[in-house]
Image 1 (cartoon, rainbow, N blue to C red):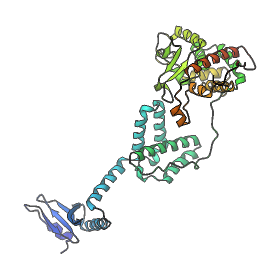
Image 2: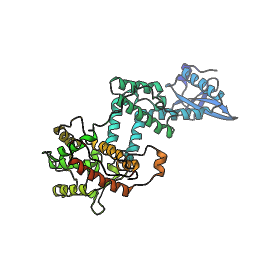
Image 3: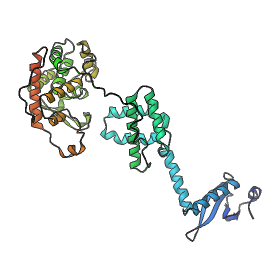
Image 4: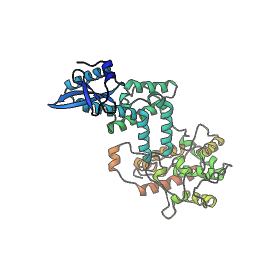
Length: 406
């Protein structure tokens, strides 16, 4: 005889646990403490099984019967109802734990050891601003292609297409991390190349090579902070990235080998970098040493005893020299690359000295040459070239007969 809610309320606890049947294998288990638990009896591969369906009264009689019917459908589909229930419970748990935001933060934390800290913080800040408010709380398994498209298009509509492209890349990297760990089955950001308008590539402002002599003269006659002048001259001679220059420490300078060794932690590509020091660069370093040799950093800020120069100091100096919008610290790298390539130096030697990552991964894997001798000769020739250029006015002097192999 089937149970009723009234009959269930009348059930009293006994010294031992007992069960009262309903229908279709459903029964109510009454414990000595008075608890009432719904269970369903079934057979799987010829063996009797019991599936817990919840406690009464939290689960009513009608709800228990629906759960029984759902479990029977699972059994009819050839699945083990108890195991399927545990699997679903685990999936629900992971769905709550593996929200997009939590997975993204885990990915960024993992990448911390191989990513510039400033860049990692910037990536996280952008995700917090543009992505997490929209899809951060969603389980990563439930995010669809349209969800990602809406996020990216919303960013682009604000006029920040480059930011939208960067966010699309970060979202895709998060999903790759998740799929590699079995947290999701597909990457909805994998192929969204056509959803954003194409934009022209933006380059750092840089004067044409013909104006190099005037720039060098302007630097050498600049009446501002002497360390800023020396920093700009070192940028011209060695063409590192500006942050790599202003953060230089004396411990990185090898006077005997005439080399500047920048540790991987300070490099954009997280790879140690060596810059050969020409006689002109060494002369500059000796002058700088008379100013800051008793401190860790080469280029100390006059405003702070504990910090080096900022990138803004160099930009401000260029601005005062009437080069605003026409030249930046990074422009010295562009100038060196352009002129050295025009003078037929080995492109591989130039790219290695610029500390650029080889775009061809196979080539990068097999081409481990550091071109140390070629780079030392090239940097010496480059320094001589700058000396000659500083004596010119309108046109850059010609480098004498450089072989293609450097």
